[in-house]
Image 1 (cartoon, rainbow, N blue to C red):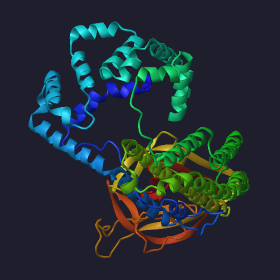
Image 2 (cartoon, rainbow, N blue to C red):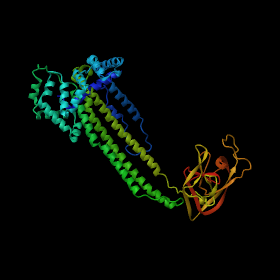
Image 3 (cartoon, rainbow, N blue to C red):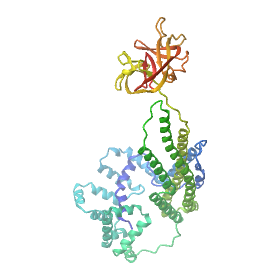
Image 4 (cartoon, helix red, strand yellow):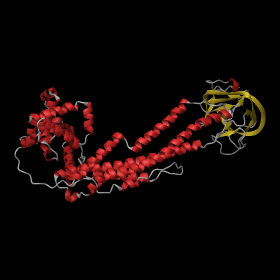
Length: 568
């Protein structure tokens, strides 16, 4: 019995035929399974970590397994029975003939005429479909067809596709069949029914249609009457591929069920993500303001606050790595148990001796899909293991951050009188600068000075006395190989007063503390509108002050007394 949902393939036959004739190489309509052992692949999947280990590296076995599976998928797609190979070769010949005949430049009418003349020897050729396609070209018929109901269209197409004086044609003309078909089409208009139908196996769909037929009077007795008097067929041996096909259907159903319900591993991983997300939301709900530079007690309080949330994340990941490892091992056993019946039944088939009847050949083409499902299950197991290695890496990166000791961020600043170079070249005391103003910065990528906006002004004005140091900068650079011109003799050195920990930038893009700069370090200094190399000449204590200032700029740097310094 051909159900209405399968008639779509008949309607699309002409389109498929056109495509086949218009390409030089035809695509195989089916394939056969490859004779190879797939079960050992499950044991080639690298086992995931059972506990966090920062000494653990991602196994090379993942790449090796992926390469082997890719080769197997290609082998399955290219595996053909002898009959399939002949059909493919015939299609290739016809495709070349059609291309030589200029079919790509033909009108639809010319293409149909060509196929009626040349396509009868092509595998799968159907005269009724050609007749229907010819009829569909008639504008008058198109107008009549458009006015038909969906039921009338289905009945008409079925009648046209059924060969004359055959049981199929008598079935289509039977009112009971038409009534059952009409009810099925009405059912398919219900979204809930259609969704449930799509999830049914082919056997379940066949059972539903048989029940519907019986409901409308098409029982076994009437079906035999429609079939007519036929000579009794000789008893045939059971299909050797039947058991493998049943195992394939069962495998597909089990995989579909898991896809709807999720595996234990997936549910556990989803729960871990929810637990981590809860920690994140808790942290966002309890933020802490950043402590000021130099406020070591305040900074440590903020440090410990955020560190406590890092600890919660670490504990969650460590707990779930162990649990997910156990779930992975159970899932591996489940997958191997799931695919073994199909794999065993397939191994019993000898393609050369057993596959002779058309029914067998049809089943063999479908069984190749079963092997693809087995490889899909191996891929899922490998994906779960890979996920655990990624989780272990995340744990180690978080642990590295968690293990960093607290370091107080001391104030790195200048006294109020220290002079900043503005974008227009003027110098003003840093205490006069405000956010939004533009100062002169430096682009290390181009080696040029640029205007940069002040994003923030830090002011530390409290009872604490900040140590200051004075740098005398201006020693000419006297070694060979410099791209920048050395300072000319007679140019005055500059004096820069700042806190000992403030960063001064070098030509090598280093940020050195003011109290760690050596006379051999290359510093950068403004000379007119250019930047030149210079050196440290002297460093001396410069007393203390209770108010210090620092700028945060877009470039991360600015010029103080003409010397390039870091924002922080």
